[in-house]
Length: 130
Image (cartoon, rainbow, N blue to C red; front, side):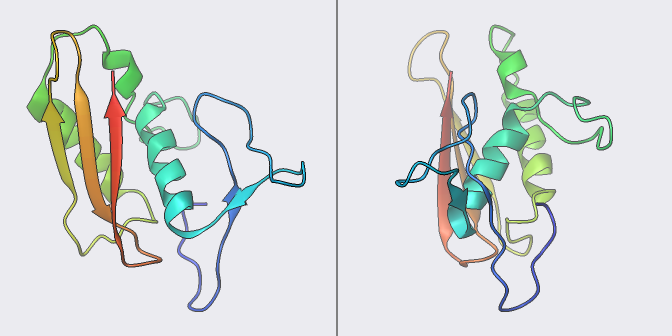
């Protein structure tokens, strides 16, 4: 994970929904993901992992869940998400990443992240809410 695959070679990873166990396949084995879904899972994991949690990669992770209940710093959150997205190998670095922050109700925050998947070339949306 994290490295670009050689042309014509499809990399895969174990499927893991953040906050849960490894995902199971339809046959009861461990599911794998590739392409846009793999990038989506990797970005979500990166955004939800606390910075410094991986001792071999101390700059990995945005730690967004730790910001729940703190004073909203929209510019800081946007900059943090953009920085982490640029470090994710599955996101096309030549295409823009946008982060839209809305507050649908008091005490709630909704992040809509738009990026281009490096493998498929398609624009993807990831939405996170608190």
